[in-house]
Image (tube, rainbow, N blue to C red; front, side):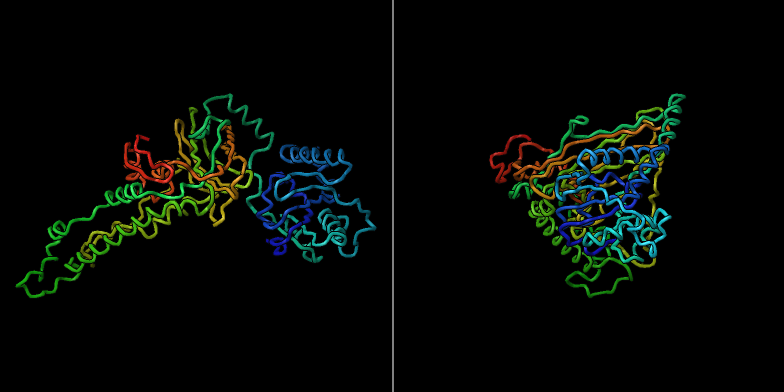
Length: 487
């Protein structure tokens, strides 16, 4: 549920329900710009009844107690600050936290709300605060408080599902799992970055070189055309003699049987291949524009594995970003070439006798492979993506590729990857710094492309890698005009 006024408001005031503090990520870590993209400041207000409910959870167990302890730390900061608002995050948008007023029962609307009920009391406090705070919005993820707020005419917003905390065991379940791990074989999960050493790794986002030279473009186009060569006409005629019927100087045109290959089909194939070659060359010259259209980018390659002596079940892998960064769908780049640059198919007979076996589905979902669960499906990306594997077997590894873009040229932040499985699998966490380079890449374009072949259509990447791995090729790119030595 999206409140339309939040989309264009510069300063946003939000009253939160108790479930926001329990079920969702820390207030300072939430991507508030997803909810209010134009806001420069987010004012988060905790009603008195919400504060009382969080204090009561200190005597609970597991997850509730942990959330209550986290809230107590925020309350202590407010106390030290004389109950003036405290800053949770100082980057855009600025996020502050404060307690709502200490209302007495007589200050609240007892006719509109049942003040003995907790949900009614919370909404009643928000309703009263809305009389003093213009455009105050109530945030909740529970049905009854939202219904009460609507009935009272309060603006309401639900937080996005992606803001939720990952589901996990509470403290008592974790203690049981720790004891089980001591009793026998167990999985041992690990994650590492291909391009770094543990938590000291960092990744730089950068614009591509501004241009590609004739030599590099010719290498790119030539390798694709070599992987999909044109079939000579004499070979096609040898395979399909029907294409020769009626084509001689002294032969009269004679209709072929339905479905057979004709000379016209071979003419169409030749014309289509010429169009394919033209498209490949245009695509090669346009790669700098394709790669730069989403801002500074980088590819992060992750290796996930199980080096234990037992398979891990229900393995969940999650990557999240902090700072002005977002994950992009790699297919968004691949499809720019994949959608229209396709070699023509060899002419083949068609009709009722033609085989349809190639159209039958053959691939089934495997339990031992990772499949995307939360992916960047929107055009502007997302700050969290995840994968799931039902049975991650011992001594197995899996490579995960992520594409990250920056919202501005001077961005700094981090990527955090968490991996967890069933009760017997101990989780792993990995963090790497992210930063943007101020200038476009200064390497020749063929070297830039070689390190980012995941961004081209998959059917081209093998041929391109084979070609771009070759050393001592001519290059006159603006940033590498003298680069004729091995890479």
